[in-house]
Image (cartoon, rainbow, N blue to C red):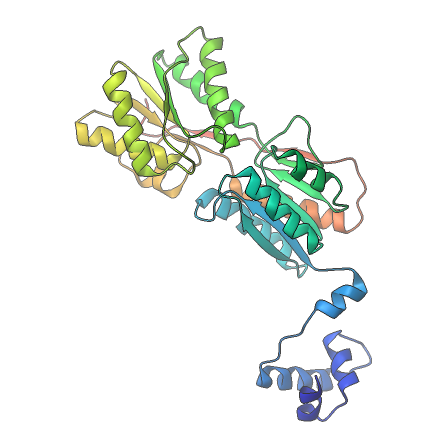
Length: 329
């Protein structure tokens, strides 16, 4: 700041006031100071200011994967909603590992974020205790947990898949399979599997056509391998619901390699409404969970809470949409 003061011809105290937008500094002087700072490549160090104000101006966010288009859209919606207030996101990814989520939560809370956003409603006991005692807004997303920690913005993954099963059964199908991953890691994928089983049982149908595809996140290659096993062991299957659009695309390509007609011989559906689902041939039936809307609604809630709203914890339900495309009838 002394270097800037010398270059701008003012005192260091005037530089300090200019960075704090103090009204005692004229616009012309502030412009000169900011230009001098820019010429010197100076970046304002907010650490001392944060200690005085008890504000850090960042929101901590955990997501399971940084290369998942859905979670990227949620972060995008959140970031766009926060930037007008000057709030930044500190992002950590858990790799579908609740122990890693626990470690990240501890690291984040040591830095005193304004709020913390976590993906999903299931956590380790210690992570849950830390969030309950954090003293800041806690928002669980992508889920509707029965016992939320604080605020919730999401949907029931189980109910979303139930709706897809109901649609298939209404169209006359009964031999339906589910391709998913390691249910001990991907809790949302596990909920989709639970929804599939519950819906099949409610219709009095066989719910045992379950094909494991590997450790989440499930890739296209793993989806193809799972479809191969399904075709080899349960060739009379009429339809398959995949835990994600990526695994569904892999399943579709395996059918194409084997000459299995989709949807003439077999229906395939995914989850997520990824871009690849819409451009596949045939285009994949899927479920749109509106990930960007989840992020935008979360941003709105955070701003309300930081402005002092003291209502009961919010429980905002998003309604996913079933998109029927060419891969099913």
